[in-house]
Structures are given as C-alpha cells and as structure tokens.
Image (cartoon, rainbow, N blue to C red; front, side):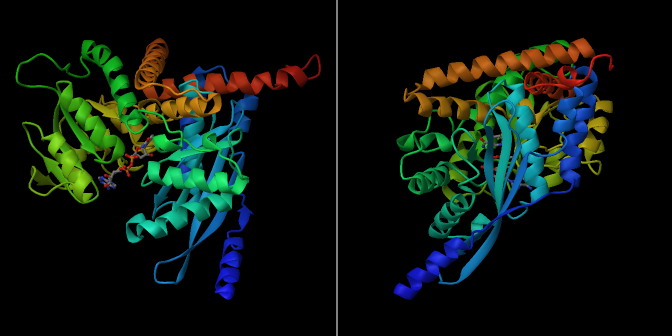
Amino acid sequence: MRRQADRYTSLRAQATQTLVTETRTPLFEGAGSRLEAAAAIAAASEDTLERLRLPQSVLKVSVPVRMDDGSLRTFPGYRVRYDATRGPTKGGIRFHPNVNADEVQALAFWMTFKCAALDLPFGGAKGGITVDPKELSALELERLSRRYIDAIADFIGPDLDIPAPDIATNELVMGWMADEYSTIRRRRVPDVITGKPLALGGILGRDTATADGAFHVISTLMPKLAEAGRMRAPGQDDGNAPSVAIQGFGNAGARLAELFADHGYRVVAASDSTRALYSEGGLDVAALRSAKAESGELPAGAGDELDADELLALEVDVLAPCALEDVITTDNADDVRTSVVLEVANGPTAPEADAVLEDAGVVVVPDILANAGGVTVSYFEWVQNRTGMRWSADDVAEGLEQRMVTEARSIWDLSERHAVNLRTAAYAHALQRISDAVDATGSVADFRPPGHA
Ligand code: NAD
C-alpha cells in the first residue's frame, strides 16, 4: 500500500510543465490573417499589431491518469494565454482527440478578440487535452480533470487566467477543476474558473448563455438583414417561416434550436456526431433535446437522414455551425446556399472560404460576436464570485441582452460605415479596444526621439 502511495506521488510529479515556443501553424496563421483586413479600418498602432503576432505564453503539459484497470495513460494538455493587456486572460478548456498546440493557440487568439469585441475586461486564453472523453469512465474523467489542473495550477488564477467550459467539458468538470485548484491553494477560490455548478458559486443562466447570446445577435441583425433583402423575417404567418439548419446539436446548438423553434423559425435540420436529420416542416426540437439528453445521440427516425455534408448545403435562411472549426472550407463553400451563417462554433469557416461566401452573397455573423454570450455570462460569474453578491436570473438575462445587442449594433454600424463584412467589422471593433489598451501602456509615439516620423 505504502509503495503504491509513493508511486502515486511520483506519478503526480510527472505532470511536468514545459514552456514551449510554438511556430506559426495553419489554423493559427488563418486566425491571424483576419487581422490584416481589420487593421485597414481600425486605427491600430504598429505596437499593437507587433504585439499580437505571437501568443504571450504557451504551456504544454503531460497529464498522467490512473485508469480503472490499473494501467497508466498519459495525455498531452495545453494552456495558451494569448494577450493580457486588457485584463486577466479568459478561455475554455476542451477535451477532444484533435486538440493540439496549433488549435489551442488559434482559439486563444480568437478569445482575445472576442473579449475585446464585447468590452469584457479580459485578455484571451484557451486550454485543452488531447483525449477522446467518450472512451473514459466518469472516474477516469474526474482524475483527468484534476491532474490537468495540478499541471497548470501555477499558470492560472483569478487575476491571471480564468478557464471555463468548452467542447466536452461541462459544469461537473468545472466543479472538479475548481475544487482541485482550491485544494492546491488551501482555500476556496471560486473565481478561478467559471461555468461551475451553482452550489460552488456558478451563475444562473451560464449553461444557456452561448445560445441565448447568439439568438440576441441574430434577432438584433435580422430586421436589418430583412430590410436589405438578405434574409426573411419570422412572424409573417404565411406558413413559410424562415428555415434553420443546426450543425452540432450539443450544449449550444440544442438550446439555439429551441430558441429558433420558439420564435417563429422552422428548424428543418440538425446534426450531431452520430447523424443528421431533416424535416421540411420542421423537426420536433423539444423531442430531440430530451432524446439527446437521455441517450447522448440524436434519435434515428426523428426525421429523414442526411449526409453530414448535405446539411451544410441546404437552402435555408440560417445555417448555424455549432460543432467544430473548419467545417466550411474552399472544398464545400461553393455548395453553401444559406442566406446567413451564424457562427456559434469557434472558427467554423476557414479564412480562405470567407471570400467564396461573400461573393455568393452569404452574410456571415462571425464567431467572436455570435458565440460571445458564454464568455459574457462567465464574466458575470467572475464578478459574482469576487463581490460575493449573487446575481438573479433576471440580472443575468438583462445584462446579457444589453451587452449583446449593444455590441451587435456597433459592429453592424461599423460594417455599414466602412462597407466591410461583419467579420472584418467585429475584428476592427475589437482591435481598436486592444490598441487603445496597448498604447495606454506606452506606445512608439511616446518613445520616439523628437523629429522622427
Ligand atoms: P458540445 O460538446 O456540447 O456540443 C458539440 C456537438 O457537436 C455535439 O452534439 C457533437 O455530437 C456535435 N458534433 C461533433 N462533431 C460533429 C460533426 N462532425 N458534425 C455534426 N455534429 C458534430 O459543445 P458546445 O459547448 O455546444 O460547443 C460547441 C461549439 O461552440 C464549439 O466550437 C465551442 O468552442 C463553441 N462555443 C461554446 C461555448 C459554450 O459556452 N458552450 C461558448 C463559445 C463557443
């Protein structure tokens, strides 16, 4: 028994931290390419653009986990803090077999812009573990979550870097992680992680915040898009309600489908990693949600089965990718026939596909605006934990709506003013705020000797 305990201690010690220098890689390169268009219309300083070229810090760790059968497996884990000029960094933790340093770095970059676009006092970060969580038991998942926090504990903190949920991590996982961090620090530290269970300081409405925020954004833009003839408005009661296709019927996608269905849209298609379903008259979203909650899968037979690619090519009013990045690429962008792409997933449109969609007249509501409801309510949770004052469900709902509507309008106005698409406008809106913060710390203009241009 003693030898086993010693061995366990040494296994924990194996979660060694390695600071690594990453080279620029495809997904990250693509994420950065959006900056160029934004820089053309934002008055961003050269210092800001130079600073945003590389992440502030990149941590790669090994996460050793004792499996239920007694064997040991080691999983690669990452945490990237991209830029902390506007505040402590903030970003989710993802468990997925495709997680790698490039992806995490790109996601941390997006978080930096998302927090600035919504005017949250945060920089951007992201984390993840390369693992297929479906292969692990609940106990193995708990050990994995706790070992990951052991490995990154010196890199995170309420004033430093605040994780949150992302793909395949939920409030249960956040609860384990917050508990582990508190154990390490020998005191309760609720403000180190958001998306926690209510009983551990979580906030009402966090679970639905991403979809709720996306729905506020589309509802704010819809009248403008309808007026410009870019999309049909709901509520005309002509038996032909605007149609929606949801790729990724998970946390965010299922709730968004429900909101659309409840507000006069027809959700004609939905998919998850097991199947894609279609019904011209509209799927029974409530039935899909309860079946998915019960079995973890969309139920066979609840609609006509489609190929995954067919869903992306449906002629609908709104296509909402709510799963993974790079689902619309130059390989399939020509097939996309929706009026509007509502990017609830992070990075669902590859940068090279942007121009194809634009040429085809497809309006893309960019991820850094469309899915920012999650981090906005995470911010409210952090404030709640720091002040010790509980927010009511109404406080959260009002705060979320106010912020999403305000920033969606500003981004729309910027896009009109400069005749650019919504993505470029959203990046420019965020870049301006980052640049103001960078310059306030001292810019080249302050330090150039007199007489220099
Ligand atoms: P989730 O794990 O709950 O849901 C993802 C869903 O996508 C699952 O139903 C899965 O089966 C499905 N899926 C996976 N691969 C698919 C494929 N190839 N085709 C169709 N469906 C597929 O994750 P989530 O929390 O809903 O996050 C979804 C996306 O939204 C991610 O890109 C995430 O980064 C982004 N996002 C989430 C939040 C949040 O608060 N949950 C916030 C911001 C952004």
